[in-house]
Image 1 (tube, rainbow, N blue to C red):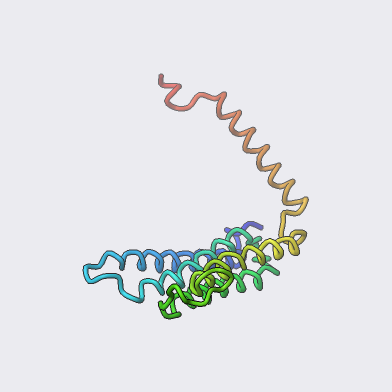
Image 2: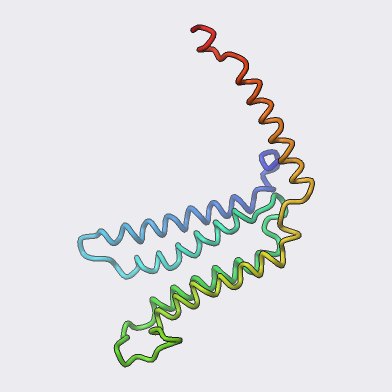
Length: 174
């Protein structure tokens, strides 16, 4: 049964598309606020700190969604990554901007930079590949799915070859 016939099957995709729209709107509003004549308001950075993780999580969900199964066991890793991104960006914004030459370094970086590099940048790079590897068998295309894609490709190719041989309306009038 295809997703258009049963809208309940696309609930995951619809929710992810809605979240993606909200995330992108937040990012756009944050960037647009930078162009105000009174300077960039404080809330603009927070819109980016929330909009970016929401948009990224929505894109991950759209890429992993499989019909009625949704994203299955990837819910927890995706939620973890989104939470890490929100906390990481939020912490970097919330910490006072008091770095100086004598500031304590975290693995060679000032605190806010270390949070962004190690938390926002590296932690998801470690978690997501492990999550995909552990769920590969259940989340990838089955043999039936692959055969269905091949059958559709053969049908499409046959239709294109037939269409190429028959003259179109403009060629008949010609």
